[in-house]
Length: 366
Length: 192
Image 1: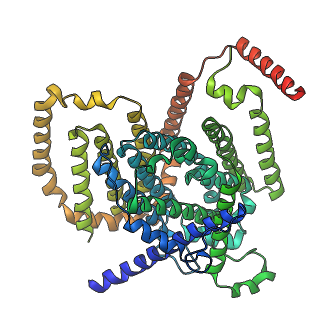
Image 2: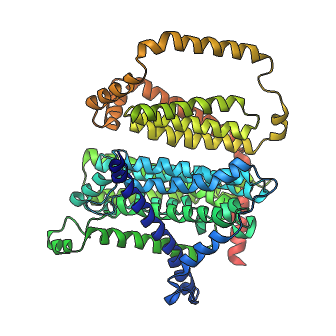
Image 3: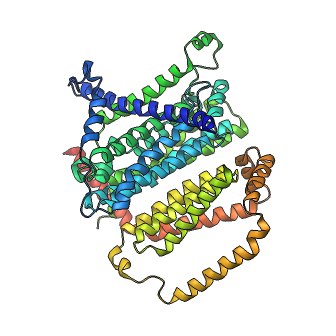
């Protein structure tokens, strides 16, 4: 019994520890990269070029006092960060980190990740409701509307990939790309839609309405301090990791080498598969940080407009075109032309004056 | 292990279901409902229906509950909290609950062999469908195609109705006028 518990629990503990370590260093990576992009140095004091900074941050947050506001709703307030944190970590058990490195492969892998992600989001809601603070409430109200809006194009954009692989298991999706090539080639529209709504799901900068510093101070986690704040913080970065991992596994071939269908590049198999995986995930993390440093925050009505009127119809078009591609089997260039036509056609339609976001939001001027 | 897990999730389901109707604070009621739906999803997993479990979490515990909380945030909770719950229904609720509980203990439990049934059902369902996502898809698009299509049409009608009800009413005349105004102002911006 004890040996069974150890053999079941030990990989889990190791996985959680590694994920936490990675998450901690992503915070450092973000600070360093942001600093570089703004012509600063970033953290330099703790360790060589700030390498021990995450450790220092963690210790600082651990030793800080946890403040419980007078007006807070105790059970909600205290359980919110825990819910957020736990559900953000659970999803990692189905991730294929390398060819044979996956804790468990369930046949609804990607659906499991999405379901768990939607539960973790309740942490944010509970934090907003339980803080007894108007900014926090506004933040979680915005978070809810945003999640609800961007969840739809996100899930629908993944449908195309699932249709091509005929499976939802993470391992089978990666293996299918060994034969069919990366799905970014077959599903370019879905990839772009996923990238955009992925940023929205992690509530990061162009879409950070729930915690917009200029308007809501810090949004749903305004009242949190010390370790409880750290849990929210870690959950946010773990979610960011998860979004990057889904993009890697579904569109960039997971642990497969570049151009897996090309035999001439077989010598690349010498490189361990987890390095390919790590490199791709790193690329997406870099991309998200880069976006944060580059783009300003969207206005709220623009945010809604973008999701419901541009991303969602396009993701549905993509599903229809992919279905036709699978059934009729026309050549790839026809598929591309149809994809481009759908994007251009829809943007053309949407660019008519009747559809501008200001009018949709405010009603028509008299 | 499985009977233990079943008891855990079933117990949590019942406790949270009681919580839904007995908490004073509406927010707690909502989160009890969330917990209840989540535990039902766990029971689905124990039965080997992982697709159903994931959909239960994603749609009921996820989307529907978000809408519940969303509407809770927009109403005045202080009025609701002060109301007495159950009103005149109290004796009916207690009476009905007792009858149902007695019925379950006397008639259903002895016949279902209680926990022995859980594990045998599990193996049976696994033997039939290795991958029950595929199974659900096949059944939905063959045997139950008509109900499936009718359900989608009903949902589409509901969706269109929501859009129509929520939309700002615009007459064609106003529309033309506003487009004209916009074009003029655009032209002015370009010149200026």
